[in-house]
Image (cartoon, rainbow, N blue to C red; front, side):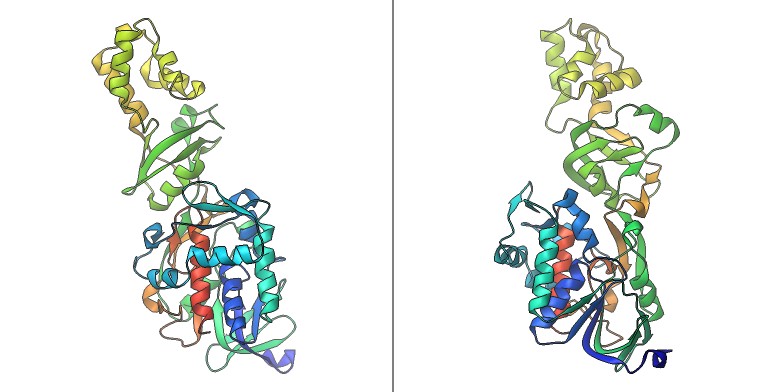
Length: 398
């Protein structure tokens, strides 16, 4: 089949996937004088970059470190992250005069548009002599010396093959399991995959309880799977979202629960006891409405707490209120899945890769970088930092 495309075109490096990791790898290899081709079946490069951060791209986090990542081997990411830091990418952003700001918790966003990040990456690719092609699906015919591939129009050969195809998340943007399938074909081990950084959905009675609260946001301390996050939570028409829930989803397991403190800065028991003494005629609903959005306070009273004057509030009733507001345990029916997930948890097992180079230990000169690898970051720019760092690590040697 390769022969039908004519003589193979020779490249030093072929990178499959024109996302954050693939483009960074291409830039790094191109700067070394390598002849680099990047191919992607999508109609444009950096689709996840373009949609991230509400269109402003949370391109890194000032405090990104190994503690912000999940992996079957939590030590694997340390090498790449230490050799390409947030400061390194910030230098690149400032080189191209892209205005940016810190939103919170070290999260850096573009002032204007995520298009600025894509533009700087493509400019760096041009300067490094990298050929970037979209609308270009590719098949791998041979892994070896050389690697042989083909597109619809030509045959390709390369010394180094880099897989930067991401995971399953957001299939409407063209996400596929290409990298996972290829790793399996090579006999490599994969960690189980599932949607992460994704909203929770409720069904039946659980959904009925929060009906009408869509759009209500509240600061929370939310815990799942032993990890806790201080972030905003958002009620939706289908369940719960917002940064707190996206973070919790990464640690949540099916059939598991999420514990939510709706008033993380307040000793609610003491507060209600004080109000009972100082404002005995005030109703509980109004007391809670001073602390929570009024619609949420009203719903909690309707569901569990009643609305008696504080003077009539027993110590047992105060305990019930504390439990409902500070220890609200929910049992999601599931998540919205890959349709809206920001990342895919799991992937190519790091036991089969070099932490220094991202190369397969059993197939020399085949590299896996970015989301396809079993390294998943917290919300807030960490996954982009992994993309830059892992792409850079492979680009130094590919």
